[in-house]
Length: 109
Image (tube, rainbow, N blue to C red; front, side, top):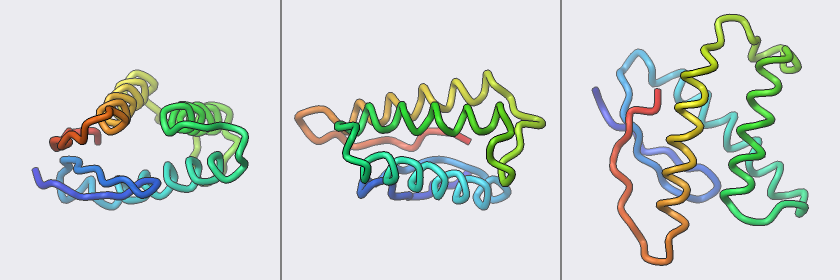
């Protein structure tokens, strides 16, 4: 297991993954970054936590409905997705605290 530092909406996150998981993790980071910055740029939703939840909902909906051909619903493990969303929300909550906290590597993928 190795750690990978990623940046989403200007915030650093350290996640643990295997070498084999790294390419998919980087693709996932790109998807999340694209969704979150797109939502932020509309100006309709304020707050990183709300933006993260909306992005997660959009990604899940696209995966379930097949609305995004690049990310089909086939083989999607809903329970694993829910656990990952919960882990991401916990990381965002830790970052949103008034005092800076160090995020420890979490095995999200």
